[in-house]
Amino acid sequence: MDSLGKLLVITGLLVTALGAVVWLLADRGGTLLPGDIAWRRGSFRFYFPVMTCLVLSVVLSLLLWLFRR
Image (cartoon, rainbow, N blue to C red; front, top):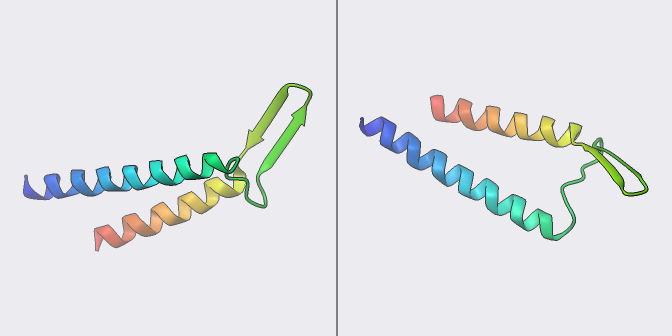
């Protein structure tokens, strides 16, 4: 049970940090990276964050790999 508690605390801290980053980036207009698709026509807006998803996937994979060691 001790390791489950540690895992929950670490997960909570990571979610809090991710929420803070998203909150700060929302103030500057979003997280458009080169490679993200943004299309606007009139009042319709389409946003597909291809590069953002790839970067988050790599970062989360590295973090999970480090915690498994």
